[in-house]
Amino acid sequence: MTEFIGHANQWFAAGLSALLGAPRITSRGRDCRELLHVTTRLPDARRRVLTVPWRRANPFFQIAEPVWILSGADNAAWIIRYNSRLAAYLDDGRMAFHGAYGARLRYWTGYDAARCRSDGRDQLHDVLRQLRADPGSRRAAVVLRDPVRDNPDVTTADQPCNIAATYALRAGAVHAATFNRSNDYVLGLSFTNIVQFTMIQEFLAAALGASAGAYTQFSASLHVYDGDPVAMRLLGRADDPYRFDVYDYVAPTPMRAWQYAQEGWQAVNVLYNGLPLPVTACPYWQSVGAMLGAWSMLQKDDIGGAVKAGAAQPADDWAIAGLEFLHRWAYRRGRQAEFDAALGPTS
Image (cartoon, rainbow, N blue to C red; front, side, top):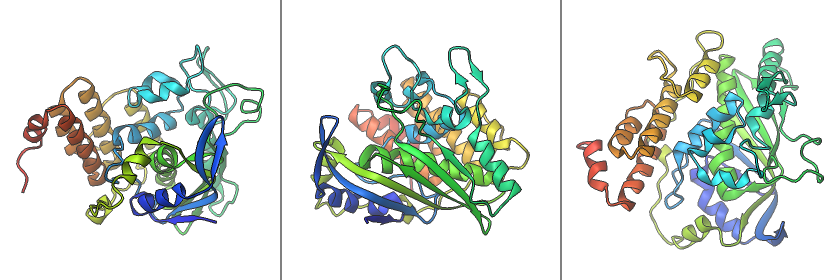
């Protein structure tokens, strides 16, 4: 069994090289290289920011998606603002995602988008109730795959890839494990899944007054498609000695324990609705708000405002990733002078 240990900046390049040497299969008419039954383990779930050179990750989308998930939303308009390519996974005539994790986590089987009903089962609240009632419990789990909605008779472009997750409270830390049936190495595991599920893990830990422990992901099929542009770009840089791991320089900013009931849920709702957080809010969520605000400014072509918002936040790892993205954005458009002026003098 293949195993990756550490945060993604440590194993991404080596893992990609190993995967590209794996057997080729054809699935749904597309050729890919595949490894079966891969385990990925992050000893510190907070080290979630991806800064692999030439990967060209969009950290604004990465940090926005967990807000969307925690809010319980399945509507497309909110998240597509951060990643327009997601529109390819919408079924014809729908502006909601069939497999949206948020709706399945927060409103299991009971969410009716047409009538805006939300009387389903909130699985995240159930996890918190389970661990509060029995801190040693082995029953704190959520499911994402529904055999009624996700079977061969259902035609959809958006079947959930992650099918379940479990949570354990041990020695003051919440440890999480996610089970994935089909994992794209470039777009799934390293780019979205780790950020999504470690933020949910730390959110639950903060609600319990605990810290975030280890995160483990089991990928039944870990694959990379033939001709994947990121893979091809990185292969072209295989001999490049340059390496950058943000965690060689800064430490992650943790979510603090909730200071009152519902604090985390309120922060998520405020951010989802585009409102400012109070100055007393958790520093991690202040950083999330700064990143969302920076992206909004960039969409208005205000590169200076985006740079200033992205730089002025408590979480150094997200700030560095955001500024690297904005530098690339400005450079490609011949607007590096605006980026430099907004960033100000450096020493």
